[in-house]
Image (cartoon, rainbow over the protein chains, first blue to last red):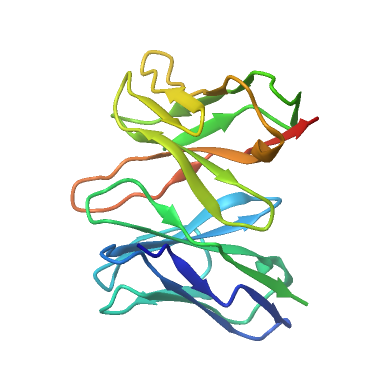
Length: 112
Length: 115
């Protein structure tokens, strides 16, 4: 069974731009979560989606948003990029009712 | 709220040495506990997990036992290899009825194994 896939793997943007990251969960997994990883803050939870509904949200500004489609694929969007948004963005999926999350390889975003 | 505390790294060991990475947690109820590993330039890989007290998770020679009385989930390996060099994250997660909860991570412990 294929793992979690994320596209693109690398992105370079400039301040003020917006970016959309994509995540395809493991087949059969309906829950998708997003995390931001930075050297200074470590791994921080962004949000979780289940059946196209946001079920949980971390402490990030409204510039960070996401959505989930009927096939469980998810996207996250960051508008008005800031230098501090440079990070590795990780997507994780899990089966409904299961606590184990499986991670994708991440998208590394660099904001210049 | 939930929290995870890991020992500070880096941990530097010689090949075939014994490894222990300490992890303690604070949570209400009975969360599931996890160890994830991150190799350079990659995402997180699930290494092992335990879902209830006294459970032992194991994989690839690594082990960790869910100790409710000491709220700990220490990672151990009897003989490390150079290929084990990576960052190890302890994490917990507890699903609430009707909602899902996030994974709460420790700060990560970098392990470097030398020949």
